[in-house]
Length: 257
Image 1 (cartoon, rainbow, N blue to C red):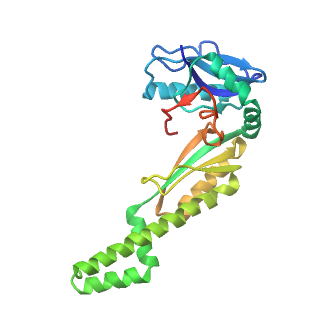
Image 2: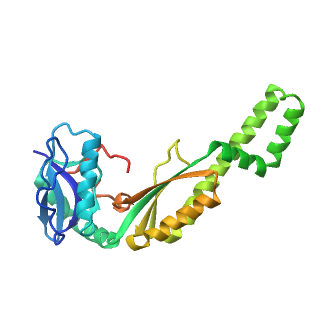
Image 3: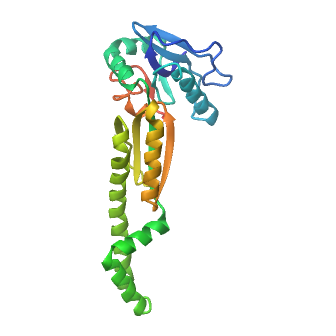
């Protein structure tokens, strides 16, 4: 049977509580594989595993419970190896990398920040900031709405101004929060968000980070921020254990944190 991997930690890490349940229906028991100074938190992998809510929550719960006892390098949902031997082989092959990451991430958590414009508020802002847009808008109003070409020009000006504001605001989000984080990871671009950034934050500095995020909200009222965390530091295991070079662990069902 293939092996499902939740995370990697030190061999000295406290063992999971007896009876801890992992993915699968019925839930499969969580166990530990050790190799030298490292350990992997695993269970058997159920056949036909899909990213259903129940299994996503089980994956997160295992990481949360084991992470409460010390640092764990989290694997993304769906990280599966052919067997236990493949897992211990990865631990041996990439031991130095995992040890360095465990030390670097100890006592730290991830906060993911996504930002999007409030459409009405950002339109008001670009109008107030751009004299050309205001002038064309007023000229069209006095002309009873303006010609098709005039309206087209106005639309193009507004779109360009909003795109420029998106770029500026994305920079502002990162610049405002980066000083209170130990590291930053910019997520993939998405049409749904103007910024998608993860921050590695010392656990004991979380309140400071959240206070800075709230200040960012106040200073940028045209932005809507979604802050997700604290999370296991998925974005800072790089290159991540979910994609180790030459390793026998695959993860093609990664879920959004």
